[in-house]
Image 1 (tube, rainbow, N blue to C red):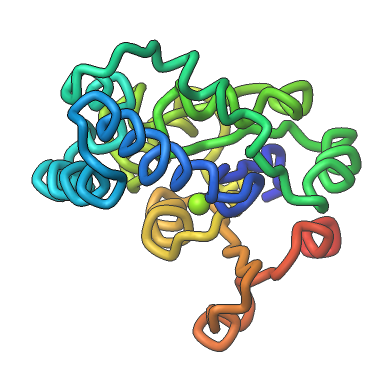
Image 2: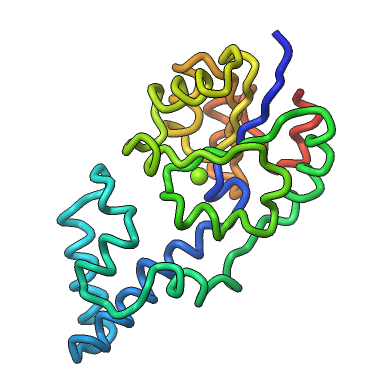
Length: 212
Ligand SMILES: [Mg+2]
């Protein structure tokens, strides 16, 4: 069956993930330090302990509004995210690839990150995307089989007509395939995925048009 829709993960696939670390492990601890009269190391340890207590399987872990309120910080989430907006790096192969693909395919994005992060990250390339899904904001789930299944139903296409590209083995590759989607992994940093899945790995998005 012919591919109609190309779906992209965001972090690590379209956008460098460093921005997240900057928000979670620098900006938040800095503000916690200032509010509580701690030095940066003390604040970073305190913040990490609280993140760990919630844990990454809990959707609150990803919720910037939750943490701003938890640490009682006097800043709005938009102001915080915008303050570091210039640190959002879109990989250089993204625009040329989307420019080429958008002539023939519908393009969507799917992330486990909440809306707040998604919108600011896609701001400069949003014209290419027909729809953007945050499984966390919409279904309170990380990307899993069920989330992919619900998205293809919402898009009213046969799951086999969607190709998803992402960098996470479980959340992008296996979850999409379990829902009947086609899927490729992108291994931008050559972490050895190629050896594990020889037919399903690309290293840059420029390889994508030839794989369709
Ligand atoms: Mg990713």
